[in-house]
Image (cartoon, rainbow, N blue to C red):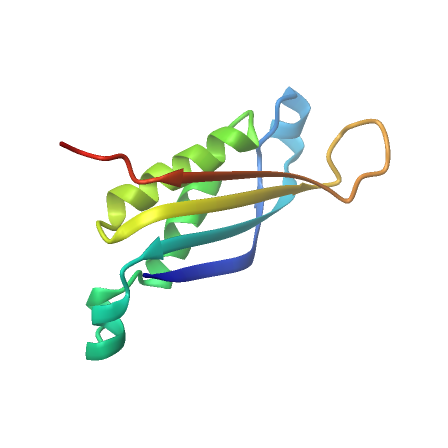
Length: 122
């Protein structure tokens, strides 16, 4: 097993519980880590045997373009997309931060982190 991670992906998007947030938009940061069997990729030096981090980036980018009310929902959708795209992935962690959230005080970022194991299929 091994990990593939992308850290500090930045997007401007239109997410938020309040309608105003969905109109004005905000800056977000996303970290995504996946666990998969990477041994064949390591031995054979074959991109087809690993989790292509360019494809992983595109999954995050595509999901960040879909307006959502909650960071939790965005994280869930990213995780489901990763499982759908990569059969090799057994576990995913997604952390999403919203910069300067509207909480009525000074706050650099609000962050939500979700982790999920691949569902067992019978």
